[in-house]
Image (cartoon, rainbow, N blue to C red):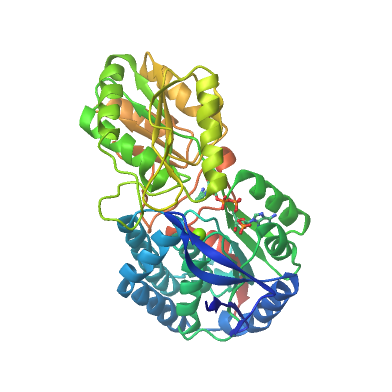
Amino acid sequence: METKKLYIGGEWVDGPLSKPNINPSNTADIIAEYACGQADQVQQAVAAATSSWPTWAASTPQQRFNVLDFVGTELLQRAEELGTLLSREEGKTLPEGIGEVQRAGYLFKFFAGEALRNSGELVQSVRPGVWVDSVREPIGVVGIVTPWNFPIAIPAWKIAPALAFGNAVVFKPAELVPGSAWALAEILSRSGLPKGVFNLVIGKGSQIGKVLVEHPDIAGITFTGSIEVGGQIAAACGRNMKKVQLEMGGKNPLVVLDDADLDVAVQVAIQGSYFSTGQRCTASSRLIVTEKIHNAFVSAMIEKLGTITVGDALKKETHIGPVVDQSQLDKDLEYIRSGVSEGARLACGGEVLKRDAPGYFLAPALFTDSRPEMRINREEIFGPVASIIRVKTYEEALEMANDTPFGLTSGICTKSLKHAQHFKQHAQAGMVMINLPTAGVDYHVPFGGRKASSYGPREQGSYAKEFYTTVKTTYTMAG
Ligand code: NAP
Ligand code: MG
């Protein structure tokens, strides 16, 4: 089997080792072998980025537009092929995989436009005859570290703005899903970028990711992943005075009020909690339901879950694909056991399912009668598991929704404008969803959270420039 290589300084290079990329829907299916880099290859990638960065920093907005637009166009043209690869390596369903590749394409197109829209400010000085302008300049070499759950969209929403604003990139994807990252790198290798501006290093985070994060020539690290690793990265960046942006976990609430449309609420809860196998930082995991609608909501959820098909990500009839790997499946099952032992009622699901091929299939689990202090309601599970917390009033629901160390998304289903408006103002989260799933966001608006979910400037939309640029203020006196 051919081994897919690393991309360093404009060349495809082998690593000392390689690893198979395994399909979680069928562990006998090896997608390809991918090279694993070592520390000195990270050094080479950073050196290549450092020496080529000035050329790219001096490129015109038109050159940047052309590169990003090329990548966006090819992603959109190849969405079906690359979406199939994505679903095969990560396990989300084919429509979800194709949708994610399309989103990556639109992200590149959006940031192609942002390269043209990188405007500054001109003001008159308080001193006579002096003008002051403020412009945004690139920060330098950006290190990009991404998780496995969005193998192409998250890399896209970091790589595209980094390049749009004139930075060079060293990209380290999650080792579990190198296929989509490699395919994106291959497109970038043909996009017209000068050699060395974009580099791909694959390998274990605790080894090569760490070298990248601690490298003195890296100007900033943008990371999406777990809170544990995020904390280590923030500390390392703080010590070295690097710019840092972290997007981490969630424990997102969905409030369902008595006056909600029951069908809408069930649809929103099922989609937000279980689709993409619940492996989304924005997934709803705490369903906070007021008492008059509670029983009807529980029955409708159980009935709906009975119609959901869990299976091979690539099969047409599948609604929910497998869990990504054995260790995530073990973690999900451990949380399900802890929910039961702490006294929540497992109303349905939670068992490992057998399918034709060996894979990591888990029936979506719904807990009822759960209490806020249980582990299943405090810690991020990152699987198809949700729990219902019953409350009396809207006020209690809001308090419960905010009672978490996290603050990524927060949702409410209600027909009351008064409660929706109040919730929008008082939810302690970076993103609020009203009668919509907590997961599922647009590509042209800011993305990020509060509290332990995020650290540093927002990603995406026009806000992305905050991380990828630094401001220069110039005072000019006509001589
Ligand atoms: P993770 O274990 O934190 O890994 C994320 C990335 O960091 C991977 O590329 C990993 O490499 C790398 N890494 C691990 N240790 C490192 C270190 N010491 N130094 C530098 N890099 C290191 O997270 P994950 O399990 O892939 O993803 C799941 C988590 O991501 C969940 O907590 C989820 O909530 C979060 N997430 C957040 C968002 C958001 O936008 N807020 C979006 C998606 C996911 P390897 O895995 O290759 O070893
Ligand atoms: Mg895989």
